[in-house]
Length: 310
Image 1: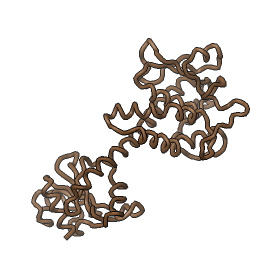
Image 2 (image 1 turned 120 degrees about the horizontal axis):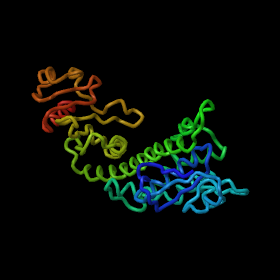
Image 3 (image 1 turned 120 degrees about the vertical axis):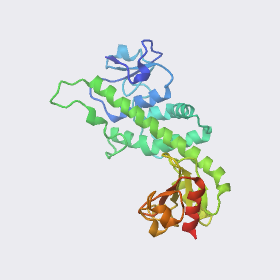
């Protein structure tokens, strides 16, 4: 059975042909195919699911069957990572194609990172995401992991099974999730670089960041540990308009605490009440927890932070 996986495979002319076994699928080969597809995002490809060796041998890359370099089922197979974890097909494919997959995501996001950073992301995702999949497939350890949901897509015993359709549906989901995991790691690298530049512009304990969605917390907390808690608040343009400020916690373990909180009497203040309570005329909101506040202008949100610190 030949199936096209994902919208990127809708062309009638395919440049790449990936193959794996048919029938019941497992996390291992679903993740492996998703890795291949991310590494070949700009190429039209199909996935062949079969046990017919004549068909398998026509494929460009064969996964989890056929005795090739991405099949871990051969007698005597014992290829392990330097840390001792044995490879399964997902890990073998990640080892070979991870850097291409990461570079494709880097290019798509328009972010500039170096080869060493790409290799570091490869190793990090291997440890956090791929090794648990390999260990499960090798029967070494069974525990919940990022892709533990995959078997839930298998047809139940009460229905006429269409394993190819189920494989196609779940692989598209795995493709998207893995791509977002890679994107998150790439953005973390870009965040660290951007914050390094902005630390020179800390103003009276206030650090401006470009967006609320920047994953700043861990990096700023770590910076504070070696810089005498220099950053008390981060401020940023608020997506719904105006500006916002958020308190920096004293540590990752105490991330729901604050080095400096907004005044308790501001708690729950809104656009009608907060200007009277705070004295800031265009202040618009203060969270009940006193760790987050908003105003219509950057100048006013800075003033709110200064009042809190004083």
